[in-house]
Image (cartoon, rainbow, N blue to C red; front, side, top):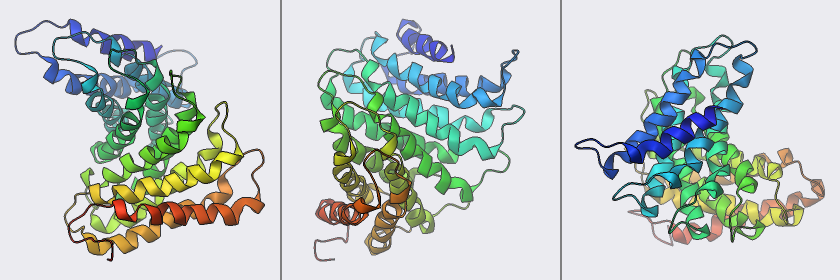
Length: 333
């Protein structure tokens, strides 16, 4: 039901007629839609409804808003605006997680909730119907899903939540998006697209790390954060359910997990972060993916596959080194 709430509100944004209101306001408005719905989850009073329902409700909020982005009809609004809109869908929901007040809900639940934020949005990308929007737009949309949620981690205000919780949140942002890649149903989209899509999951999250503003968070935290970016995506590879996807695809997926994160290192803009930090960041990117290889649960996957998978972790990261664009960094750094 809550998905219908955000779906209806999102679709109706184009029906607002008011002096000064234009398509330029839409991204902020859709952010308010998901933020308002998220913050209001604790206000529901109904027999049988308790905090155990929150994760499913959270997934419905971003899924509903995402699926209705194509139903907005307004002068100046086109498929070119979708990237900015989807980013606000997840940032709005993520930033409002601390506004939920409910028995049984605490900062301990935040990492699970943020996983559902990106899961709901990612899985509904195929439900967008809009002129000019097709499978070629998916990769950038997925990148914006994780970027929006990552950036908004600093907007959460809740007792018990501080900078020390960021790594756990980060891991679940990429895990949620990765696991839901198989739920996308869209013409031209198949399991052949998965490896490229998972590279965008980690690229979006990595590139947005410098946009988190929070007490106690600085460039010193970046390496531990990027470790969780790749850990979350890698650990969730076994949760993807899609025709044509099996254990034979894992090596290519793992290679793209680290490649996406590596390439996006040049997108991070943050005081105190420069090319001299890249070595430490690279170490953590590969460590994050390698350390969770044992958490992948998938038919046909066993310890016999580990050595090959580890080689793909490093191959992906190494192959992307030449694609890092950053002041002070050269191919011989």
